Image: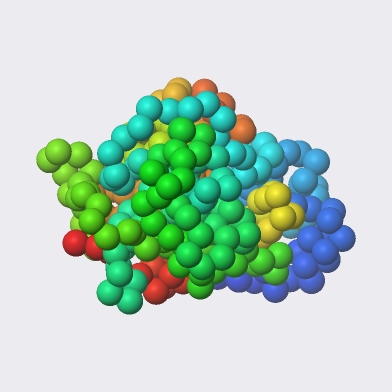
Amino acid sequence: MRLSSVRDLKSSIAADPRWLTARSDEKANMAIGVALGGKPDEHRLAVRARSEEDVDPDLLAHLEKEAVGEVDLKYTGPRLVLPASDARPTRSLSIGASVAHYEHPAGTIGFFAVKGGEVGVVSNNHVLAAQNRGVDADEILHPAAADSGRSPNDVIGHLCGDYPRLRPEGQSVDCAFARLVPGLSFDPLALSPTERLRSTVAIAETQLLVEKIGRTTGRTQGIITAIELDFFDVDYRCGRLSFSGQIEIESRDAAPWCLPGDSGSLVFTRDCEPVGLLFLNTRAGGPGNWGRGYANPIGDVLSALGVTFAS
């Protein structure tokens, strides 16, 4: 199917009373999006569920009929935002390094950004704002507490309190921004000694090879397998929240693409163009059954925070 055809199908499904009733009655807990192929006309309707118990057979049959059989059904296992556990060696202040609100174990610096003339770091809400509990000027640690970071010596910034809150009624981002304290030494664009992040945002419309640098698993390679996932429900400490427009990434080999503690990692192409902000890894699916990664579209993150890439 062409991309436009899948998008039109998604819109019609979302407005269908059968879909709305199944979700409201909790007979189905399925996300729908666009499964990517290698060519412009190889798209399918992506259907994602935690397990077979979340699938309404009658509704699935209806989706398959509407999509003329072109349905990509995959199971994710539980979708839980989990804290990092094991401590990791400290890296310098850079993209991919350990960071977190003083009440959160550990996450990852996604990228450096500018907001209102001030330079800071971007990561997830649940990393920098401890799932909506953070208030303006709260201390941000690098390395994070799980990696032996402590106040005051490891305070590298302060939370900007106008971050987008996580809401039961739905969102497209889990993100926050923290202002850096003056005098720190860092390179805002370095991905490696020879690679620098570009500010041009990449848009995935066919399968796209991507990478990320995370606090837990370091630099890994993956492939974007689905985009524009709506009705994507995730369990947080504050409850089950619904996301729209999400990006799905699978590992390119049998090793995990991401694990707890990688939350907040920047997803970027081999040309160093940003794509998304990682916020979730699941327990099942993908090569080796290590699970999949899910990311907010980077354009939505920049807009929600009112930031631009630092240079």
